[in-house]
Image (tube, rainbow, N blue to C red):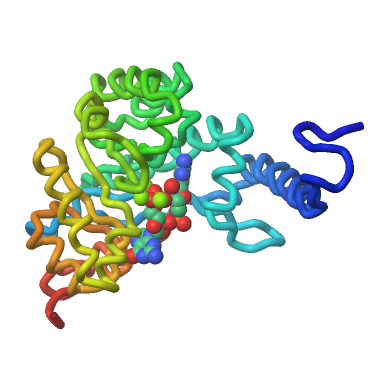
Length: 286
Ligand code: C2E
Ligand code: MG
Ligand code: MG
Ligand code: MG
């Protein structure tokens, strides 16, 4: 028996691969169970207007409280779900939960737009737009209240197919956001051909700028590109009040990051929202 893609003997074989594979399979089995066992939950992080401090939308981020391993970060299990068929069910679960929460906020008189992350596989699923529409109908949430975040790399996996799906989603009134922008290789031409509404500056650029003002050129350029294309610009991963002030001066529309709030479960988010007093309180120290 020769394992696929591996040569017999020593060359190319690393016993650690087996450990990783077993480990991954175990985690995958656990993840299937987690979906039906209520081990997955969402946390919400506010996206705040840099113009007036208004809280307009929240990003839903997935968390997995594993019974033995504790909190497993999404970077550890989303790729696993992506490489198997599980991501379809996972995204559906996230949308279902996030839209139920959005409905609850609407009922409480708090109209918050909800941003949900998607994966490459979702963009290659020709049924995805129908899935999204049926969940919007199920919860009585307008399509304009939903933002789908799509990473550059997910788009590039199959750009033609992804564009067609995004066009059908956008035609329904759903907003499309390009996540982690600048980390991939989307050309300006491709960007223009996509039905997108929002550009999120990759966290790595924002954080590089916070550490070294010489790095702010990239952030400024992405913001300018977004503005020139008529898109809403969002800076993610903002950790300092100084960066908030700078981003506002660059014309960035929206910010997200620990300096404003960490992602929180809904109840905690509601407490945070009740005491949110606007940007001045955050930037007062600068
Ligand atoms: P992302 O969509 O780019 O989300 C932003 C990540 O940055 C989140 O990490 C968030 O907790 C973190 N973050 C926010 N503000 C700050 C900050 O000021 N400093 C730092 N250092 N980090 C900050 P998280 O929650 O671990 O998620 C990581 C990635 O996993 C997400 O990146 C997204 O690509 C993926 N992900 C999370 N939830 C889902 C989901 O429901 N579906 C899919 N497909 N992917 C998801
Ligand atoms: Mg995101
Ligand atoms: Mg991001
Ligand atoms: Mg990311």
